[in-house]
Image (cartoon, rainbow, N blue to C red; front, side, top):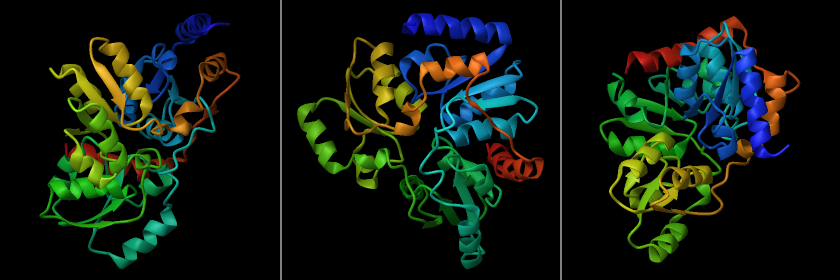
Length: 304
């Protein structure tokens, strides 16, 4: 089968079996084209909770599928490729953070959405890259223990100097592959291009950027901007998607090494096997763990 034939068969089975397919924006173009929803991780889980379908397939990584299950326990949730994990989500576990909380008992624990369900059970509030500043700003406590991404935490701390942040040594291996050497090189090659980066990037990279934001925010900025040239400082898939969306504009990678191998492990054939019922992994969470993890997400929603 070619790509078109695979896509057509997936769409046929998806409609026949009433399945909702979610694709994170870092997925390949051929996968986003057959998805019902494409976007950032938390946004996808919200769309899944609203979708009429009772079966959800996540084309992304494990914590994203778990977040879908947290918000939609009554639905059957599949991770299209069971090997798709997230190195950052695995950097810290429940036991470690419980120990850190004992050392800093007067700190509010803020966890990035890129964490496991188990780790969320011992956190006070969850944030996304787009909501982090707003949510932390609304917290009554000025003492913040931000996990696991040190770079995102440092970026939030810069926006909120009145808060007292404690950061741990965690981060996204993909976004950490680009530093100031790459910034200087690409800006020299493309002096008129605007630099758009994700807050998971190194602090000196975000400080050099023309715009810092989530994956969706970066795409929206580039699409709506009057500028014609952009350097994209996030996963390479976004550069490709933008080239399709805005063929009249020029997009350059901050680094060709900005590739998330966990995202790339999911293929169109994986999605086909999943809709056929011969592939993927069912995501299961015990109810006690799910409810404890949901508390920090509910707190995020409560704070706006």
